[in-house]
Each structure stands twice: as structure tokens, then as C-alpha cells.
Image (cartoon, rainbow, N blue to C red; front, side, top):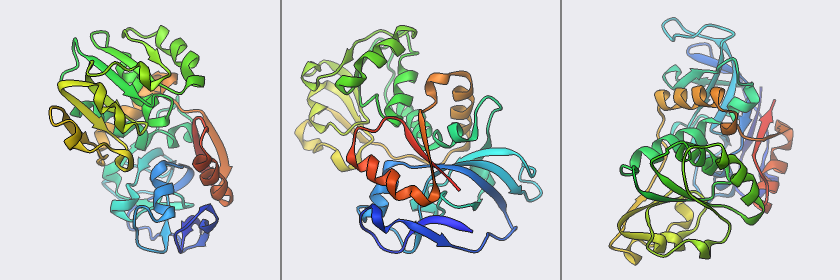
Length: 302
């Protein structure tokens, strides 16, 4: 079978198709229909995040069950999605077939296509878990940085559904009108900002940074929280000792993944705009993501 992987680290050109044996039928085997590209894949490919080589890349997948062991709760033909947490499990999602623990796999609702479903797991689960780590937001003022990104968009739409929370969104200038339209139909209050300078100093109870803006720790009021999802552009906590600093990393959790799938099926706003490329063009997806300015998600298909 074919899989997108690396035998050495470097630029997008080191990505290639690996020839690997199909997994044994001694566990849940998924025939992959689509696998999304995430920033962690770029960091792994470049060597910024060390991994054992050779390595199959990818965290997110959606597909159909090819083999299901007894007691797994699945049958052949079920439409499913998962995030494999490649760095921790060693299982990459960008492969024609993936054997993975059924405890971390959920069914895809009928309202979702498999390509839409593949774009959801890592960003969606991270968003659910990150918000759970913030203090009670009722009556509080929140700033979300990077709403235009995949993860930021998941966070934004959840925050904007909280009518008792005032959430300001900081987005790129050319995304401002889009987010003003999206928030117009939501119950929450707040503004859409397109200039970091517009974020008032020490004005927010919680700042959630999904875009890599460490200087905005200065926007947190004394006793507030700065929660970052971007470990490579996090501020020095010593800069604001009066602020609770939290660096969040995703954890595999089936219930959280099921929540993401269910909500995305009911709310089209949570689905990412996808650009579909074949496995053989994975290098092009990486190149375009590194160049910046891309909106939505790249999804690779066998």
C-alpha cells in the first residue's frame, strides 16, 4: 500500500510515497478516504519536532472500516473518523490503510462527507479541550487570536454561541468581513478586530492564542489567563507573573471527538473549506501552507 512519509527531514521535497505492507487484520483496520494536513505535520517533516524515521505522517483521517474485530463496536463498511496523534502513537494517518485503536475512533454522521470529516478531528478536539481548561467565562471578556485558522475557527464558533461571554476576535484584515458576517447570526457579543494594536492592554479576562501572537499576553488583565495553542511562539511567562499562563496540548479522547462530529453535522459553520489533493502531491500542500495566506484545510486522498 501507499503512504505519505519521510525517510529524512527537510523541506517539502523530502515528502514521498512509501511502499508498505497492509496492516494485519488483528485490530480495527480503516481504509482511508481522506487525511488532513495540519501544522504539526510540517513541523515533523522539517525536523522541528523529532520523530523516528522512516515515518508516515498525518494525524487526522476519515474512511470506512475494512476489518473490525469482535467487541470493537464497529462492522465492516462503517464510516469513521479519528485522530491518531502520530507523535505519541507512531501511527500516521496518511496511508491507504491504517490499523488503529477502536477506543479512539467514532462514526461519521450521515450529514458529513468523509473529506469534511477528515478536516475536523485535531482542530475540533483541541478546541473542545482548550475551552474546558479556561475558567468560567460567564460575564467575562475573552480575546481569541487567529479565528481565521482551522483551530481558531472551531474555537470562535463555540465562543460565539456563549451569549453570556463577550468575545472579541482578532483575525487577518482580509478575513474581517467574513467573521463579521459569521458572528452576526450568533448570540454572543463582541467585536471583530483586524489590528493587534486594537486589543486593549490588560482588558481581557482570558486570551486564547491560536495564531501565535505572544505579545498579546499584555492584553490580559491581572489575575487573568493567557492560554496558547502555539508552543513555538509562546511568550515568556515571567513577562507577566500576574497572569496564569497555560500551554495546551491535545489529548486523545473519544467522547470529545464524538462531540466534534455531532456538532459539525448540525452546524455547517464548523466545517472547513477543503482543498483536495492526491497523496502524491503532499509536498504541494506543505509548500503552500508554509508560504502562508492559505484559507481552510488541505485534505489528501489516496
